[in-house]
Length: 135
Image (cartoon, rainbow, N blue to C red):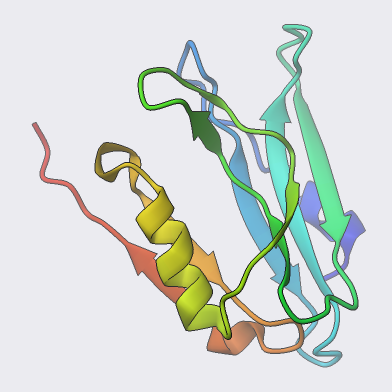
């Protein structure tokens, strides 16, 4: 899969007002393990109802360098749509430690899912999610 193909799948944001949650994905060419792209379908900040599809190629990350793509952000009281991506630094030694660092940073009531992977090793991604009983 290439970045141009992400948009071909008609990925749309969630139609749930007031946040209109973005949908995020990752695409990787398993024949070329160093190539991976994040993708996000986001609602326009101007209120336009059509979807903006963002693709982001991430290459040559060094130890401790991370790129985070998230659906939401919160101050613990209000939830809004998150930034398209965030660059950060971590002391985590591997994808499992990073997964626990991210999961632990989320307020329990906002936890849904976290996935971490090392460039070139997408099939070995560490994934954690929480299934909540329906109310």
